Image 1 (spheres, rainbow, N blue to C red):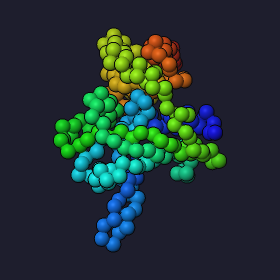
Image 2: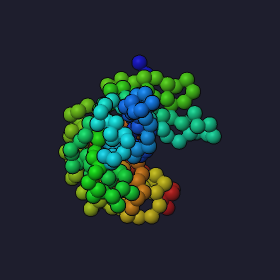
Image 3: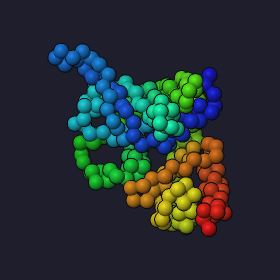
Image 4: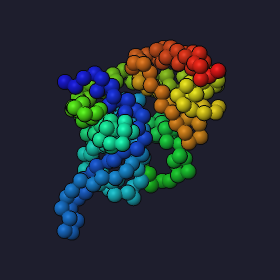
Length: 245
């Protein structure tokens, strides 16, 4: 079984990565045999970690998925040096399905605010990839297959946090705007006006305009109360940091 550290690296990479390479099945056409087809897509993670894609029905990958829902998605972080092979990366293997879910669509747009200019286009659909397996690479000699059970949050806590999310976001953004700015500053964000736009068991996301910052919790939380405790801890640490002076 893969190490807990590798599983954590994979989970956090899925949470924070906003673009990836989607592999779908291109059907036979003329002299071309059925073959894998790779394309760049924009990604957000659902509360239960499932990758979310907002795809145009005109795109080749959407037409491929209409015929065969099986797919894989490569997500990569930045390399640690000039060698691209040092980049941490995961390949998610699963089955895609259209998701008629207003909350998930709002989440995708909150995490990809640049897309607001074409949010109303009617040929786009939200797709959700059910994770059936993951292959993770965290560096030299640090690669393994991961079972979904090593990655996915329990459905009960994922559901609890999804239900509590609107109230937590509204409270933080209305009553603790200065704390959100302090946390953003501690994570390298500049200026004010940062708002918390999404949260999950592993962390939360702050946005200002088209900028989005991912903030990781020290460990996965198991209740809405634990989310609040982590937010208080992070705000206090940010205010006490020398960088905030």
